[in-house]
Length: 463
Image (cartoon, rainbow, N blue to C red; front, side, top):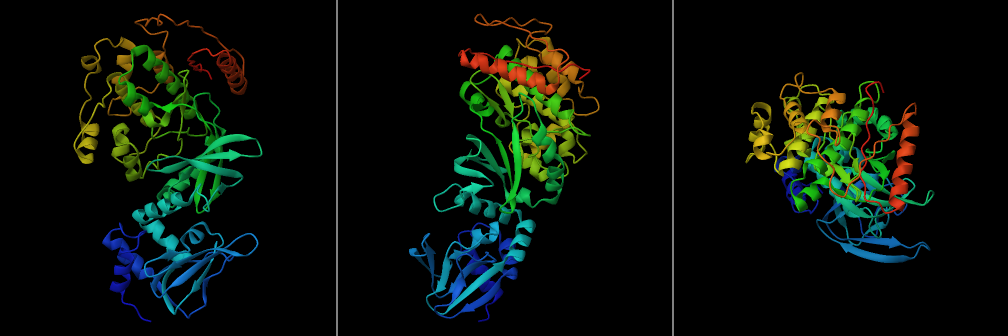
């Protein structure tokens, strides 16, 4: 049966998974479509065989027969024109879960794996649809419930770049969080080249204020990042609930974040740059301790669209201009965060993305003291110098930054709160691993005693 291109495109536009795609994308998919004819009672796909095709029923009727463990058919579903079958098996390169049998003479449109993957790489909106198909099947009864050795137990959240799931590691009897990269990242060569280079270093980061990455798994045609499971709220949610922070409280968070970034920027040959510092990537536990998440997920420095989608309000001018970037983009974003924490507003806001990005490149930020009159001199200096447009003039000395953000040793000597006690512990001649173990032991002891505390760490210039 010969089917015209316009007929195929019209059929695709009425199918759920293609319905919201642009006209040009649908037409391109239609050009990649092939046609197959099946007589009554023949198999389109067989249970247990590797999924090589995604079928769209064009004419006729098929039945999906799903066997149980004993081989008995426990589920039958009848499908007609516009129904899609085999998409998940094709996507994750696994076996078909069911037999698909033609109940009548049937005409089916199909994409093989090579053409399907080509379209994902070519069209970001198709990659987004594909990601949603996977998300709809992950951690669901009868769906995909395992990644590597980890059992998926539920969905935690979803962002522009990834979807996060609860999971259980039966071998070590612990809960973990697993982040699935969306397919627009998994098939971006620029992103994956950098991600593969940094993945091993990211997994070795060992700092009390950086989330522990356990491993990276290549499965189901994408990447999964397995991380420690944390309890707490992200800074974005806290800001929405409580508004601006006080100076002491802001310093406690900013100094911990600065410690994490200083450490990350010192790792590997060129250092690890986060690229997407923003409140939603900062987790805070009930004791005020922070964990920085999402290293390596902000997109390639050359891929401006990925970065802009992530967090345009925190982008340094050099990212917007498409220039080479280094750790100074994180310092700029840290300055924006400090501004937001103290004022509960962004330094730049505009009705359109284009105007916002232009402001960040061209316009000087508001004077923080005019909005926050009680700000101390050190914190004011950090915000001013971190938001300098020219990266070469921007503050970049971590020793200086840490001193300006130190909750205790600032020039205005911010006092402790009425119910606070400050303790300084200096660890000398200890390795980073030893120091981390000691810090974790102290935290564990304080938690066991139900002490409400916060802890900042500082690394000397020589280290």
